[in-house]
Image (cartoon, rainbow, N blue to C red; front, side, top):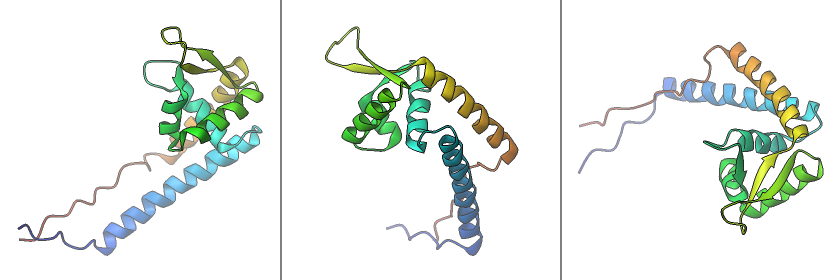
Length: 141
């Protein structure tokens, strides 16, 4: 039976703490940027995930729920709020009309472009802060 791994050292905790601190600083920046444009942070993330969905410019609600790490019914409510603001549109899927795709509306596209530019500038200013910390430990023999 292999021996349990060694305990994390103080340096490991400092590394993890610094990473989480920098991640939270970026999140807070993002929250304030979204609020400054009159939307919630979740609405910004929804727009981002619609535009950034791999190999498509739209997404299904279930896919957005996964990306947002929320329940499907919460994602439906979020899409409904964004649709009421004119940020997204629901469209029946061409190959399966039972499914509905979420697409960015022009207003959502413009808002996302502004916010994404702010986020890109903020990430550049962080200069490599977001490197995944390496805390691998050898197993004690």
